Image (tube, rainbow, N blue to C red; front, side, top):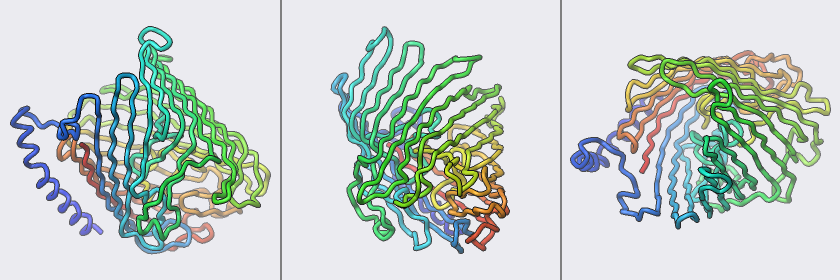
Length: 470
């Protein structure tokens, strides 16, 4: 495994050196310092046209399966190209973004899905308006209509995906108001875009198929943020809604969920503590499966995130953070209640480790403390090492990513212990970044004893990737 990772890294470094030697020399000569190369500058685009591109390639390898009924090793090579452009007419603007996400090397046991492959698709296509002094002197209002992506608050419930090879898209209206004192209000009402194709055979071949808005699913949200709300903390309150029902070609869980919550946090700064607390409850109705015969259950779940960090005033800019995450599970699969929290369209890599063909932990039915040590010696290098203990919040509910469940609860709650590290190197700051990471999952009792558990034991995962930004 290490041999393959090293070979890929050498190939990527060699290719990058060939591509950027001339660009570095020209920029250094003109500016006496290495500056990012931008596609807008290369194309000599007009001032009102913003255009950018990003290409990322990542190789992932895994030894020891943790998913139900699987055994052996796995690997995948994923690539993602993004090209975005926006033209500002002076208040009114139009824009779009192309996403081309593909995979290679997957086999019949690889957990491949629309989060890995979505070839040659329009991720965004929109028209909008920006204006000042809309409601009061010094404010700003931005309204967007069309196909969009969404980041809201902490990104735990609505996010533009980073590590994942495809990005969630939505069609609808999005608005953001920013006040003169820095407070902001965000609102959206959308139809989630269903990525196509969905069948594994087509995903293996990276078949191009047009994505479609799902008119039977609505996702909306309201989010308010205020800096210096209390004792130097920024305060946020929010509510998200998700409603869906079946259509002929798509069976759903008929969810009608409402997720209100709040967040308080203090940003990290050198020589000081930083804090964050986020709490959300979730209520409504949902079935436990998409089967037409599955009954609709009353749902009430909740999640909690806490962390405290300290950034040391030293050369390596080290930061130590202690964190805790809890998301409820369903306590009794035989009753008429569903207690499992759902993370909606949130991201999880920044808290629970690499996703891709790994990613055993998610923000649902989990009870997990952890600690992480981060370092950033200079503008080129940064990295961290981390540890998490992971338990089921409910022993009788599923561990969603593994697909394992023990309705009796006899397999216990311990998912295991996850050790993780990541290292980034800005080969050409602002343009090219190398990244490598690894995670080791020590199986707990649940992963070893739940029905249909993999016999492989512990899991070792590693990845290496290169990202180009212009």
